[in-house]
Image (cartoon, rainbow, N blue to C red; front, top):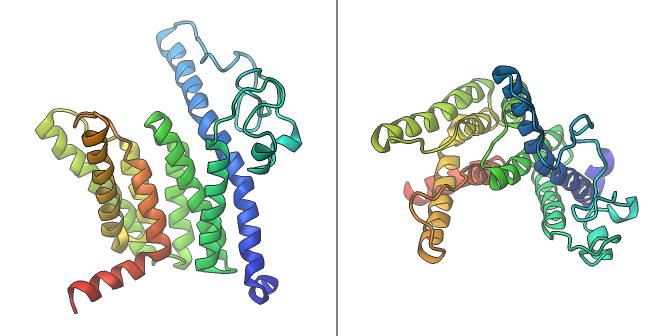
Length: 291
């Protein structure tokens, strides 16, 4: 901590490098966790319905498959990626975006996620400095990034990420790191009930679900971290951006009002902004409208 206090740039460099490494792991989480969930669902269905268990096509039955094993491999030729080629961002540039074995193109999403995770880490380190709050906020930011990727891919927000995020928010605020504990507890309850109520009313009017329960749990987690006072900031930011994106898709990309759009990424982005700059946004709002 003393080194980082004396040389703040070192903290940003370390945070950035750590972000690249974690970003590489988040790519694995975003791809494998939904497959692990599907395999678990199918296994449970087998027990309940007494039907044969057919694993997902990309998962070999009887083989270990989790976030740590098997090693990352090319989706084209299935050959394991060599260690020197698995260096975040650098490996992609070195291979010029192609597999070293078969020449298949590698999605640019992988280095982009790694770079974005580094940007998140640098932003957190810059705002909170060499403190324990930085450590906690890094976990918060990277979990939100993983949830964003999974929701974009599958329209799912796994309980295995949202619920630990909620409990972590309550625990870090035992010492009031980001919000007083009472505000954190109320924020968790209010966050869940806010979206649950909106969805309930929408269901009464439209006769169908407007959003998934994962969105309720994610906003509850954000409320636990930020306190109830910043929930309006999160809801407003996410709603505005979501409306703009949804309107753009309808006007320019032929989507309809019934097109499902994952709301988790907007909540996650708004939550991250609120954690770092929420108080300033509230102050600007008050200064602008109540001067």
